[in-house]
Amino acid sequence: MRLEEQIVVAAPPEKVWDVVADPCRIGRLGDRFIVEELAPDTVPGPGARYRVLLKVGAVPVGGNVEVIEHLPPRELTWTTITGVDHRLRLRLRPHGDGTRVVLRFAYDSPGLLGTAADLAAYLPVRRALRELLESVAEQVG
Image (cartoon, rainbow, N blue to C red; front, side, top):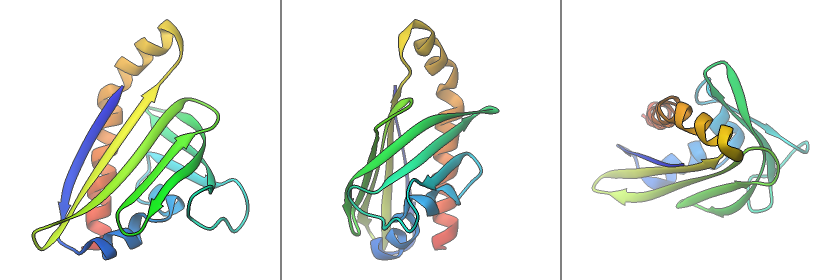
């Protein structure tokens, strides 16, 4: 399943980047994403690894991810290396006097039951992504 949410933030891309450049900080923006370093003192950037869980209802799902793109102040992308297959991409682009933040999230649970679970999780996951973007706007504002 692929989802996309976006928001325009009244701040330059560099200021928004300060909020989203570190995946652990993304995890602190709300109560639905849990992000932890896999190694102490991880430096955000390509190759950095994290444990990422998304609370879907009361159940946290996810796995270990690796950052594959970290292009200040434009893009952050991670993909799973273990666990429930997912990919997250944050894109920041100038938009008038602010920044358009686009969040793309794709995930796929294996098997027939996984497909049913993905369909059931569609609205809660979309809501979680929207809340994450709204938290980014609040942090920058």
